[in-house]
Length: 240
Ligand SMILES: *Cc1c(COP(=O)(O)O)cnc(C)c1O
Image 1 (cartoon, helix red, strand yellow):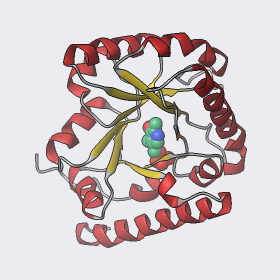
Image 2 (tube, helix red, strand yellow):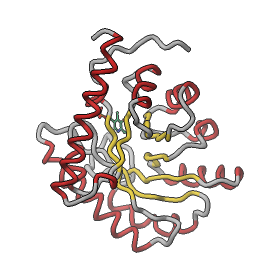
Image 3 (cartoon, rainbow, N blue to C red):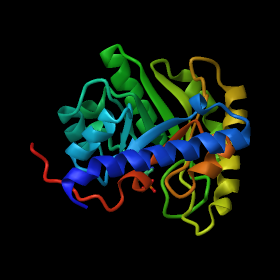
Image 4 (tube, rainbow, N blue to C red):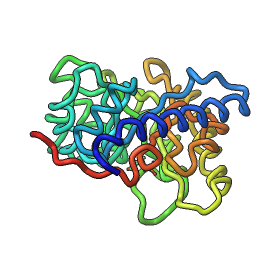
């Protein structure tokens, strides 16, 4: 792949992913507008990420805060940034403000974010990460502990919990991931009955390159797609 051929390749892949999203929505009787494509740019350099934005992608995600800061500083300001990976407390200051944090994986982070939001007089939108596949190596709240968070969520005034996020265990057959996604939806439905607004719990961030169609069939509203768009593209040397 040469640099000049990156753009058409990216355009083709983006078109293909959007069509898959569209088809999965149709199978599930859902509207394509209900699903937001978050392009996870961790495999890409700044120039490739900028190309995605030129091609109309408005939502970009990064798993490492430092990389999010770097790309955010370089790209257009109308990009909606999503943090999809672990956030250490000492990185909160530089990470805010941003569109959505998908990966709140522990209570202490929730309370630190609330403190910072109060201090700034702003609102912070988050999802709670759930280890719905119950893999020992994974971060996130255990499914059993989630409903017990209701009273803590209720006490948050400036952190708004907009939904849940999970990552399925890698699988050769994406249908194997379905129970993980179903569980996340069920947990969301139950938690939603326990907490009042503004904790809308409308979002389900689930589905990555290998399993996003199944996730959409199970109710995903945010799909986080990296390699299906960016695998194999050269990391161009960044100009900054
Ligand atoms: C990297 C990453 C993705 C994208 O994964 P692909 O399989 O490359 O689409 C999605 N979510 C999180 C949390 C990630 O770290």
